[in-house]
Length: 456
Image 1: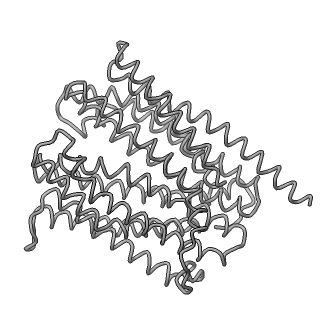
Image 2: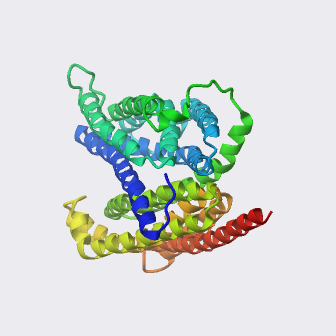
Image 3: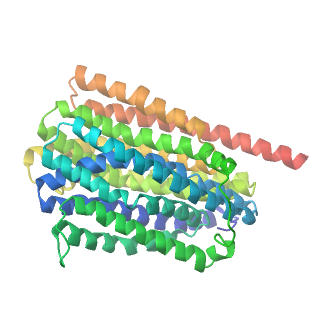
C-alpha cells in the first residue's frame, strides 16, 4: 500500500488490489463447486451427503472465519499509521486465537455431529456420508484458520496477488485429491463423497504451509519478522481482536444463514420449485463474489488511509468502491435480464425447472443492486473498525424485516415461493440504506476527530 494523490491513481491502486481478491474468491468458490460436482459423479447418496455436510459447515465456518477477519483492519491501520513494529504481535495473537477457535469447533463437532444428523430426516447412507465428509474436513480446520490469519496479514499490506497465486496453485491440488479419494485411484481407498472432505483438508494444509513460507521468506512480509520473537498468549490482544471480529462474524453469519433459512422454508413447495430456487441461489452466490471482493478490498484501503489519519482519502476510496460495484451490478443485471434462460440451462435440462429458475434469476437482478451498495459499505466500515452497529443492522434487515416479509408474501399472496425472494430483496435494500447512512455518520465523525486532534 502507498499514498495516492488523485482519484485516477486511487482507482488504479484499488483495481490492482481488487482483481486478485476477486480471482481468489472465485477460486475458493470453485473448490466448493468441484466438491459437489465430483461427488455427484460418485452417486446420488454421495451428492446428497456432501450437500448436507456442506450446508452444516459453511454457516459455521463463515461466521467463525469472520472473527479472524479483524486482523485485516488492525494490520492495515497499524501499517498506515507507521506502527509496523506492532504488526508481528497482532498477527501471532491472531494465529493463537485461530487455533483456539479451531479446537472449539473440533470438540463441538465430536459431540454434536451425530445428534444433529440423526435429528434430520435422512437415509442412513446419506447420513453416514455427511458425517464422514465432516470428519475428513475436521483434519483441515486448524490449518484453514491459520491460513485465514496469514491471508488477512498479506492482504492488509495490499499484496493481494500473493493470496491469488496461492489459491490458484491449490485449486488443481484440490481437484486432483478429490479424484483420487472420491473414486479410489492409484491404490487409494474409494471414499465416495467423504473423500471430498479429506481432499479439502489436505488442500488446507498445503495453503497454510505455502503461506507460512511466503510470510517468513518473501519480501515485504519477511521484513516484519513475524516469527522472530516468541510472544506469550495475550488475552487483552484477543479481547481487542474479538471486539472487532465477533460483530463481523455474526454479521456474516446472519447474512449467510438467512439464505439457508429461506431454503428450509422452501421445502413446503414442490421438488421442481426447490431445484429451481437452489439453481438460482447458486448463480446469485457466484455473482455475489463481485461486491464481496470489493468489500474486502475496501477494508484494506480504507483501513490504511484511516490509520494514516487521511480521512478524505478514506472517504474517496469508499465512494470509488461503491461506484465500481454499482457499475458491475448493472452489467450483471443486464446479463441476467437478457440471458436468464441460458444461465438456468447450465444447471438443468428439465424444462419445468429451467423456466422457473429463469424466473427466479430475474429477481436476482435486484439482489445485485442492493448488494452493490451494502457489501462495499460493510467493507469500508470494517476499515474504520466500525462493526457493532453493522451487526445490529444485519440482524434487523435480514431477520426482523426480510424473512417475516418473505414469509407473509409467500404464504398469504399470489407470489408463492417468489415471495421469499421479494422479502430477501426488501431486507437487502433496507440494509443498503441504513449502512449508507451509517457510513456518512462515521466519515463525518472521523473527520471531526482528526480536526480536533490537529488543533491540539
